Length: 162
Length: 290
Image (cartoon, rainbow over all chains, first blue to last red; front, side, top):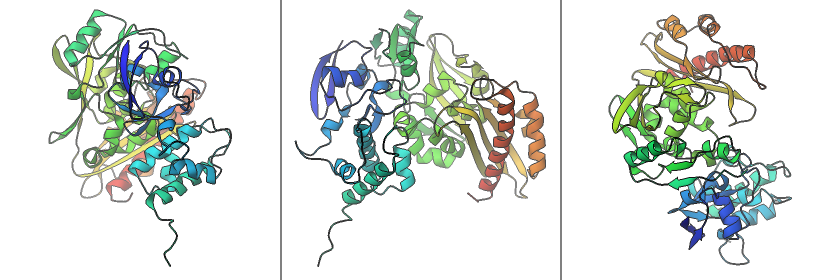
């Protein structure tokens, strides 16, 4: 069936089988490989995208269900080509990633959290990424990255004026 | 991990959705899809048609009707989680929602979807049974109502007529010095519960228990109220021994499920411990502590 999808601010018209998940549509039809296929049944969180600004699992949505909503993938969070979002930047700085498989999803989960809660507690950060499995980092640096990004996005670590 | 082929429809009204279900015995309703899609990915479910009711606007609302709060079946769980009305009037529901899946699944999962699915371990059916909610459904062109405790007949098996669609759930609002407690044991936070306990009570002026509802989930094929324990504890001060004795007697009548994760005896013992904790929490909560 032909459906219209709004992905990263661009309208796309695609022809997919109804059983195509949003994840497979993003990866295989729109060639956006940043949403990763992990378990494909809603357990690992690697396929997280933003659906109208909120983190969801793209493997648990069939592409036709997403018609009429704004989808944002990791490719859509950077301000300009070659730049990083404050969250991505913080992940680099605090070593919040190793193999990188869970990273796009972690970054998007963080964006979703910080959009609604600019000053999250450690517990709120842990809760926000509790549905995303990471087998490398032990999570500590990821939590640190999100806390650092939150600080920066609130503008609290600007150099003190002399 | 790919679903079998199916047709997809997105009807504009509930009656259109009912007609689509009536035309195909293997058609299934999809709203949030957070249970159905994994089942389809694992090919444990192979519907021939999905009828998407998520965008039917009449099915998404949270309304105060005086002595009750009605929630539209397709209302996203995250909306109920953030609702000030739910927090103020349905404290037990507010306490249980964070236990459902994860933030990302609550963003899609619906209140009615979980209730209609009727997983024995799910939180929303437990709260609906504990609070004696009324379920509304549309079938054969008419809207009918059913008490939540008559809705479940087996694990994920309900009395919803074939081709019917759950449209709303109405939770009664309690007045007075109300307190709530909720406990769950699972392998990892947000995984399926092995045992869960939900309690709402109201204290009289003298601190005795005026009214109490005790629900146990994940122990039997569908959530149950411990009516005999409720009766035994009403009018008492809810002291520890009385609570344990009442729960012990009520749980002796249950035939708990048994699986790889938890034996029947484990479920019975844990139900007692969690039930007692939930009652203690509810009492403290009603007294204004926590």
